[in-house]
Image 1 (cartoon, rainbow, N blue to C red):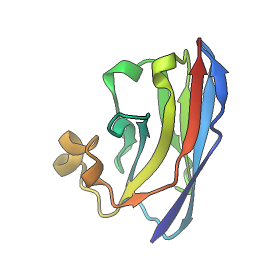
Image 2: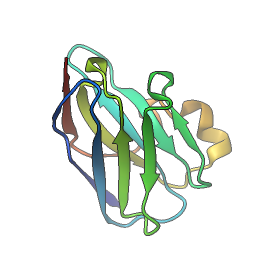
Image 3: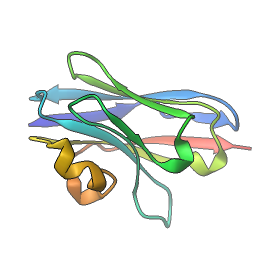
Image 4: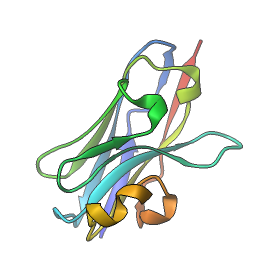
Length: 129
């Protein structure tokens, strides 16, 4: 099974950019889908971006046009490029993965936490005004 380790979190000024990464160790193959979630104190964990195994991507409405999810060809690193960051983007960002992913079955549920069966420990992003 894969082990997910996030990195790259930092404190940035509003309007700035940041790229966070998720390193995948252990087993992963092209049946997996992957995603980024975030959680801030007192709030539920929310899906931010997902990439499914046919290459399609899905984004939370509030980050569309600002965030970009991508993955290395070897599937070992997942990225989230975040531009024009806002204070509301602050939170702990988690990488998630699910095996034997069937996009047509999961597309509507990609931002539900119970869709995903592998999680990292998260990396902290703070955006200050």
